[in-house]
Amino acid sequence: MADTLVLDWLDEFESLTESEIHTYSTEQEHNHEVMIALYSILYDPHKYKPDNLIDGICQQLLNFYRSGEPHLKKFTMQFIPSLAFLHLTDKSQTSVQTLLVSLYNLEVIDSKGQPRTVSFRIPSIAQSSIYHDSSTLESAFTAQNSLRRWEECNSKLISWGPLPQVECLNAQNRQRVVTALMFLYTRQMADVIQQGIEFTCRGISRIVTQGFSMSSVSNRSSCASDSSLQHSSLPRVPVSGPLLIELCHLIYHAAERCAAMAIQALHDVIQRASYECYAGKKKELTTENLY
Image 1 (cartoon, helix red, strand yellow):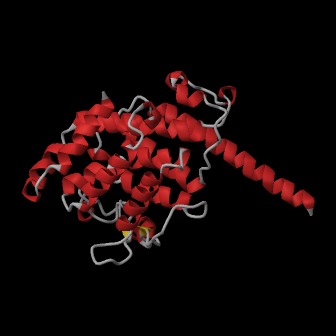
Image 2 (tube, one colour):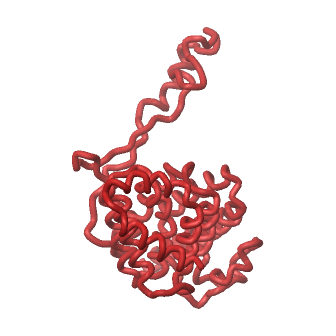
Image 3 (cartoon, rainbow, N blue to C red):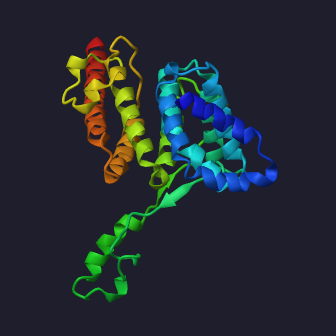
């Protein structure tokens, strides 16, 4: 059913004239049926036919992004985690890699083609915000020494970027690119449908638990029935520290949206992070013993 729905969706866009694209883009914002079908296919593409369905989906999403329509760009961005998780588990999907590289390269530059930097400051009571007016604080509360201490957090802006563009995904840049894409996705999670959040949490659990025996994964609850998590014979998916942190940010926002799978995904990430820390420390000790 999902594949038939998506095939019709692919054919519909190809038949549009240029004057119809804007109206079409506003309709896609509420096309939840197609969104859910796409999430299902990207989560487990081997269940669906034809074999080139993923290629068609990736080409369509790239066309959406490049159309210049904000609604279509937002439509594409919501599938970043699903696409990234699919690439990490199945690198034979070349169209997925091409789409991820294209999205990354287009997002790390601004409208003038210059490297993009996103900056923000940590909120401080010493500076006014939408929640308070610092000038109205009591004088005793804003003593000079205390105020100086509160302002220390504003001495340096927190920045993301600039990041270099890439030609392809390889072992050297894959983790960095996926981490950056997760950051971009997290910034617009408020616009993602609830089912999309749930699929993303399931994808996180799959990524961090694949290749581990079920007996080594503690506290499994609702995810334990997911057959994809029981394939301990599959190779483990490498995950860097920055990527695990970005996944935690994503899970935090998912929990805010009351996603049922968010807590389980958090448990799985903590379990994997603990394993990575132990493995790293063990390697360090082994290296020291060699000398």
